[in-house]
Image 1 (cartoon, helix red, strand yellow):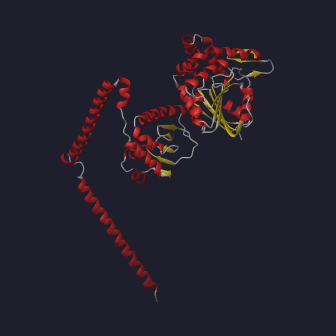
Image 2 (tube, helix red, strand yellow):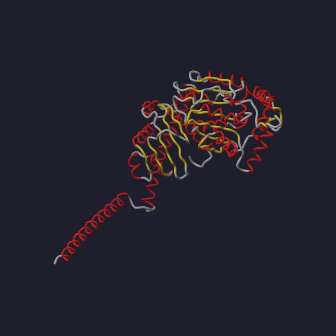
Image 3 (spheres, one colour):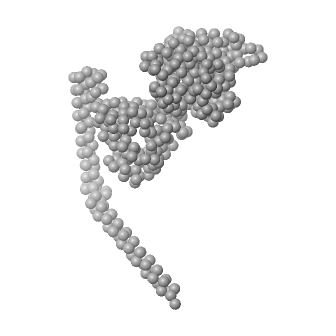
Length: 258
Length: 215
C-alpha cells in the first residue's frame, strides 16, 4: 500500500525526507513511485513474510474499529493491493460503495486485479488519487482508512485536511501505520530486524534490498503515536485516540469529523 | 474496549471465528436455525480476564467475533469463565442464567436460542475427510475416529461411575446422594418450622404490646 508522495517537508530548503536521506521535494514522488513500482507484484507476499502474517490481524482490527455498516461509503486511501477494500466491499453490501484509491498505478493495477479475482466488483471503484488533493465531494464519505500509507505522504497535514473535507459529519478516519515500540528492548530488536533482516528478505524474495531499506527508514521517520494524534487534532478531527498493537510496532489512530 | 493488545485478541478471535464458521459449515441442520438469528449481536464480558467480545450472527452460515462493536446488542452477559462454562454445558440454560453469577442485560431469548442451536449441532466430520482423501479412505478414517470417540465416551462414563462408587462405597469420602437429599429435606423442614415459630412469637409480642397500650 502506498501513496507515493514524500515525508516531512522542509519549506526553507525545499527538501524532504526520503528514508534517512534528504532529497528535493520535486524528486521525491518519482523516487517513492519507483520503490512501489518495484515491490507491487510481490507486495502482499512480502508483507506476509515480513510480518509473519500479523499485518492481517492489524487490518482485521482496523475493520472492526471502522464499524462500517451496509449502505455506507468507504474510502481506502493508499489502498494498494486492495485487501481492506475487499473486506469493506462485503460489509457495505450492494447498497454501499467502496473507493480504492492509490497514487501509484502499479499498486492499483494489482489491487484491481485482486478485487476482480475475489468477486468484489459491483460496489468498488478504483481511483488513482493523491491523498493531499482528494477528488471527491465535500461530506461524501462515511469512513476513510489509510493503512501503511500516511508515512509516504509529503504533506501529512494537508492530506488530513483533505480527508476531513470529504468526510461526512460524524464520519471517521482510521490511520493504521507503523509507530514507536513502547518497550526499549522491543525497539532494539525491531531495529535489528528492520535494518538487517528486512533488506535481506527483500533481496531474496523481491530481488530489491534498497526498496525494503527505504520502507524501514521511512517507518523511523514517521511521527510517533502522540505526535500523530496531535496532528489529527490540529487538522480538525475530534475524539481522537489511538490503539497500540504488537507493543507499539503499529498504532491505529482514530478521529471523527464533528 | 479492554486493555489487552488488540492484535493478540484479534488473532485469537480470528482463529476461533474460523473454527466456529467451519463447524457451522459442517452442520447443515443448524443453518436454518442460525439464519433466524441473522443480524443478532451478543456481547460477552468475561470478568476473569477483563475481556469483552461480541458475537455477530451474520447469516445462517457465518458468524463474526469482534473486540469492538457499535451495533446494538440483543443481549449482553457478564460473568466469570466458570459461569460461562456451566452455561455452555447446561441442559437447562435458563436455570443457569437465573441461578449462576451471570449478569444479563437485554433479552435472554436470543442467547438461549443460540445455546440450544450449539448444543444440537450435529457436525459431519466425515465431509472434509472425504473431500480431502476420497470416498473410501475418508470413510474408513472417519469410522476409526467415530469408534475412538464412542470408546472415549463409554470409557468416560465408566470411569465416572467407578470413581463415584469408590468415593461413596469404598472410601466413604462423601455420603450417598439419597442420604444427602434426606438431610437437606430435614434442614429445609426445620427452617420452615423455625420461621413459623418466629411468626407466632411476633404475633404474640404484638398482642402483648397492644394489651399494654390499653388503659
